[in-house]
Image (tube, rainbow, N blue to C red; front, side, top):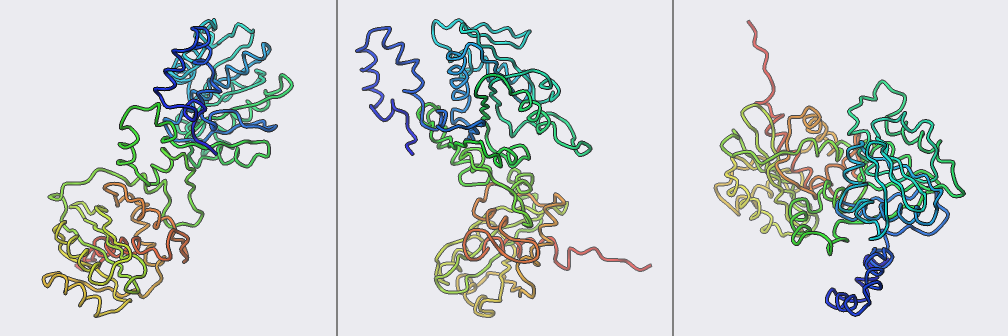
Length: 448
């Protein structure tokens, strides 16, 4: 499917401007207000007999504009339409969905006299159609009112922003509100709801994706490049790239926690922080998982540190792909020197003494500690994963390839992540085991 609008497909910006200037004023105004001409395909209502349209897309994709234009189309064509506008809270409904720069008031046609009554939370169209604003924090507010249509914005944020603890409830506030909305959706011949959101693996979103009468469209922040500030896409990619957070917030990808995985994306995001000062670290080591063959898997090279209060830090992923023994050994030596590390910890299962020889050939002064894996990868990783659960490990930056491998290691054995082997994750485990779980880090009992 094309990711460009008719306007983008037909002409470049200069030619479009020339086209507008060649038209009569009324014709030019009509073309400027023709959403079908300016919208990208993913921003237009999908075909078919759907009851729910779910638009999952990255930030800045144009979800708000698409939602506002869809509501306008309904209100102009059906004077009896009763539309529910539901946001995280009433302030956000007003600031984003109604009064925002891509909201309903801003996208109304020039002579379209919409009447917005903030005190009544009501918006009226000349056709007679009406929309009412509702807050996701007040599920009971939708118990009773009837509607023909609804626009629900940022549904993945609803529970997170209500401030409610629903551990004592039978269902979350978001699920309760959705049920009330659906029960009241009984006006008109064809009831429909549009839900626009940046995806997160929350119960409501998972529930909606299981519905039979749903149409789903996806989109990336980069799809709306023409309407975003210059340099924004490049800045976001530089900061977040292919990280789990970037895939969710920029690419609109639903990153679900794998059942039984030792690490979950949500846990790793909680453990992310700024890079510490190297002066605050009492030890820095380089973990190495050598490849099994000369040009086989990647060589995992991960830099980790420990501070004075016994917290661990992941500082760098310097892993190399498709490298010869001389190349990956040189990369280890360079990483060791760049971080002023005090030790290289390398797995010796693949080659034993040969691993040490290759590393020392790259640097005679390299202090190498060989470790032998007596247990499977997951068993070795479980104590390290427990450190993450305890909040004792911090990722000082974004390490997308490493983090994807971590999320592929399963409890009880098995690996379902990218690549044949979790070489980067193995290197991380060796480094943190040395720093946090070595004999010198185990509390001793003093006998009196």
